[in-house]
Image 1 (tube, rainbow, N blue to C red):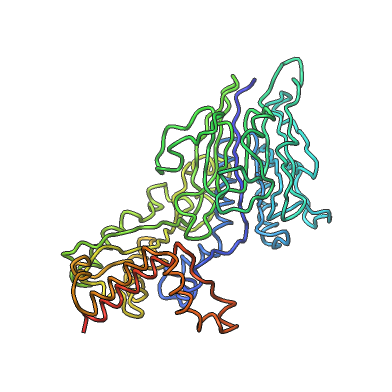
Image 2: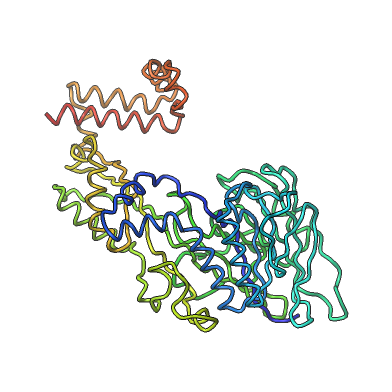
Length: 483
């Protein structure tokens, strides 16, 4: 076996819109500042910048091949812009001697129609039946890549069962054999639809040396025992790559909404020539999502003091600036400074995010509870903080108020007045799911009897109702005590 390098990426979702940022886009489109205009550009260009960084990484690391495990587009009817961007990336990789092996997924299923944009000669696209393609370097076979593509947007077959290790290819003996598949692995797919479902045992049975998977948008690296290797993408400066990965989801190259938090990128893998692999997660996403929950200290009693505290805590999430990485790429999204191969090799390995978008949740008993729960208060706080944060590449997507009044809830519940009776009634309902469901159904019936609203709203479930009952009780207490 020879030593070689390859890159594993998946779920590029080129030209996919970011979800839940329409208000931010509208505000940025107003041209309030250069920073807000920059955010608008990043939200338009994010997936394409990630593709460019992926291409740069392959060239800089002199990768022998790139594996793309499905969903390179966001839909079967991919935009012309997305197809042109992918073709241009493949042309750059061909010029650098990098092969590309691509298996289609549920968002970009295999099409029978002839493409108006043919791929360059370095690209191998897997079809509807399992195939195995050798990857060679100067006449020597480095690896044998097995793959198959989805043929429709809702693949229900267990495609992993179609894979099988091939016998030794030549007199030189065994080579690394890799499975390339877009699939939903049991207990790993989370909220993702169970397309091409399979169990970990199906992967083991195929006897591949490495499974390059796609579909799950978070990075998961698995050992043969089925356990997830720890520490992946945990720290931007991680220096210890996991050894002997057996199967991996590299995650999407760019998180597309607030639930896809943390760094997103690809895996850089190095074969040691003895059958072993080492994997390193390389962040690529220019936009990073984060969630921050902050319990407001009880001694913070006015809004300016709260803002000062929030600015201090949020500062730790600010993206690392372009100058810390030689000034290449992050500020403009363009190719590294300079021209040609040398510039590509001088570019940073880890690309920092250019923008971090944060969901902020405020909790704890606070004297500001009444002020924060007032209509429009959370949005006003978010907008005021964003005016301070945007110059550092930080934006608040929203502020969730989950605080409580500073009053002693337990003591208030024992009071022989209307406030105490309200709290006792709410507490009783929270501990009686059946009674709570009945009260909710009666209370919400007028709302759900309206046909138009019924199409837009859904009845709160058993997990939501206790939380709503608590919020209602605290609101009542606030109204009774506040005036």
